[in-house]
Image 1 (cartoon, rainbow, N blue to C red):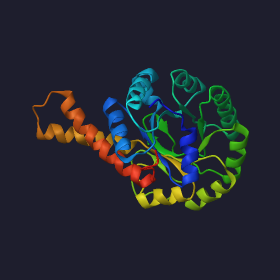
Image 2 (cartoon, helix red, strand yellow; image 1 turned 30 degrees about the horizontal axis):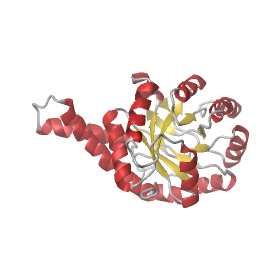
Image 3 (cartoon, rainbow, N blue to C red; image 1 turned 120 degrees about the vertical axis):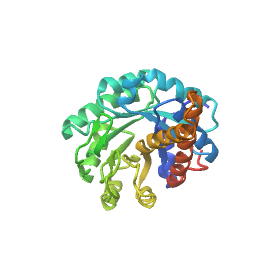
Image 4 (cartoon, rainbow, N blue to C red; image 1 turned 135 degrees about the vertical axis):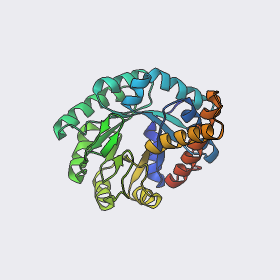
Length: 282
């Protein structure tokens, strides 16, 4: 199946009361793992890359991997720029074929966030590509993303922001953080409900690795339509490689330990799809 955009995916999720899992991929094995998991469970899926990942290898490499995997799949697959940190990077991913773009202006003041988001929306909407933005600031640190202590999304500002920018989805800050949590995260789910009342576009939850399943499910019930996972995929892949090398110290074939990492990621992704409730929604 050809790559699709996230527009219909998220609107269907919003109407159906579930969320689509969005998984950050770093290599071919992780792409294969996400596709295999989604196919087994009949789920639509989003694969995404951050700016630091695209510094490691350009968007054309990741686009080619995901495109090849999607064409052999029977489920809807989208490729998304996660936390695009500049207008230039957003346009670069757009021009390289990405079917969904995030511009993260959350580190700017409100009016500057509106301005840069609106510019990206104008470019992407000219070709029917949806745009995700962020208001408030998801805390924590992951790669080059540093949200510090974070900052909560104000419902009234979210309504104004969505209307003025015409974004297709909005990432909100309700207490999640990127990276590894030091304790159990406590999310302001009542704030999420207040945002849902005044914002019509699908809402997105970032920093979900490590958030208890029951909390994620409650967030979906309160309006989240896209759930991002990154750190735990990396941990799963690395655990698979480590276990393979520990059991077989003489292994030198990357296919052996890469395959072990791939299997760990696949099992992790299957679990997240079930939490999101997107199984059999393809």
